[in-house]
Image (cartoon, rainbow, N blue to C red; front, side, top):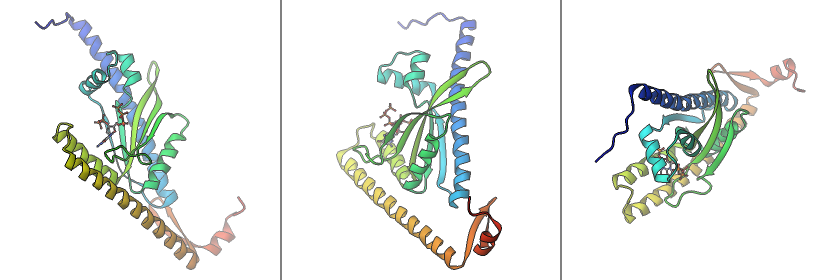
Length: 248
Ligand code: 0O2
């Protein structure tokens, strides 16, 4: 026989408020990281003249899946234990164009003063046995609320479009077979992961070559390209050398 604990409406209301406040702090932390990423994206666009971020996805783990993870990992079921042990309640995934963008963005985030880097798992240099590649960061960020400051964990996954394509498909197959993927499919997925890595390396090379050619072209036509407020324009070098202090 199931025993239903006796909770009166006042207690229920107070539990609801506490849970809502708990989840809200993760939403704020996620929003904060998203804003930081958006600023980096815009700044990167100006400095490097291309957009390194294809898109950003974020999600909050549902209370049900938090509780499932607590049981699966054998942690104590209490809010302080959840706060300390479940570090991916707030998750942000950044999809980049090229592999080098991943490390550049990761550095930019890690160098921000209010961010504390708790863990960095580099599944790109050291892929998972199934071929999974991605850079995972567990960051901690202070959230300033009306009556307190909370340090909140956010998991940031950074990967290329190709890595993301592979991971989404693998994730679907993994759940389709209820986590018991037939050997033949695992082998094929591993081969696909190798093809993804080759593609990423090739795209990186093409990108480097394209920027080299662009720089060479700019030096031949004696002008420098500028991108300000999304408008591109060219100024001759002799104008720049005459009118700007280049000794700085
Ligand atoms: P969801 O819905 O994406 O959040 P832990 O997080 O503590 O359970 P671990 O192994 O330390 O376990 O975490 P890790 O390696 O940082 O991976 C956590 C997340 O990375 C997963 O979240 C996935 O999003 C992604 N991930 C890790 N390995 C794989 C993989 O082999 N294939 C795919 N497609 N994704 C992977 P969740 O919790 O599984 O789910």
